[in-house]
Length: 286
Image (tube, rainbow, N blue to C red; front, top):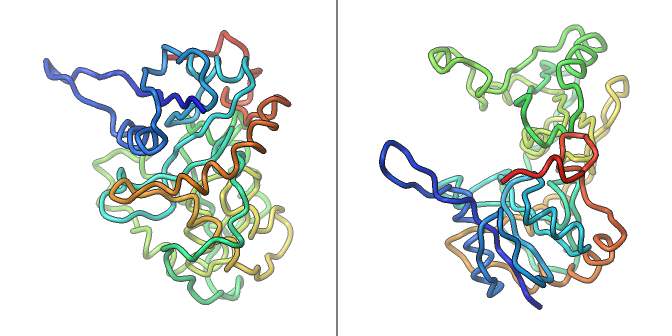
């Protein structure tokens, strides 16, 4: 199998070149799979599998989609060890819940945060978690409209803005994420990784889009009372999505899903990387 790993090009800060932190992840998995390295704008000829960080149609990803081969999409983790940039999640042909991963049921246990006791959803506050409006995980949906709908259905809910949407001068005044989780007994999310964090914290959670990693253990309707899910199998599977650059990649498990990922790719079943628009060549970026 010929594996291609596509890096972001070096940037320039002032007069000094700098490397993208996402390239750490691509190099880690690419080296483990003996990949041929290139930039995202130069597809590797005749590759059977493409590794990329981030969720967008680069020239390399567009080439993979035209040829119907799998794309391993590396993205931000739910939890991390040490520096957050040293941990990532992966999925075939899509982002988080929109991607495919093989069944980990019979795999050995891996590290994950302990699951906290499940809360009574009526015992505390309802919190609606915002996201960056430019987040590709939103997949082109109208996030402000979704927030307004959530606030209309749940008028007593508290809206928590994504920190990157708040001017940095106000960060010191923001409630900490830990304090927010402590007071929250019902979390409302779209596709934010906060949904997985709230589930781990024992908070009944509504995830309104299947792209959420927490979707399998969440309620999906704003008007339905959430029920207590079985989280053990979910977090075990999620632990096998996580990779740590200081450790050997779980290549055998990753490649165990290749054949099914290839069948999905050949059927054109890729997650939408174009913010909900048609995934045509006009949306290719470098």
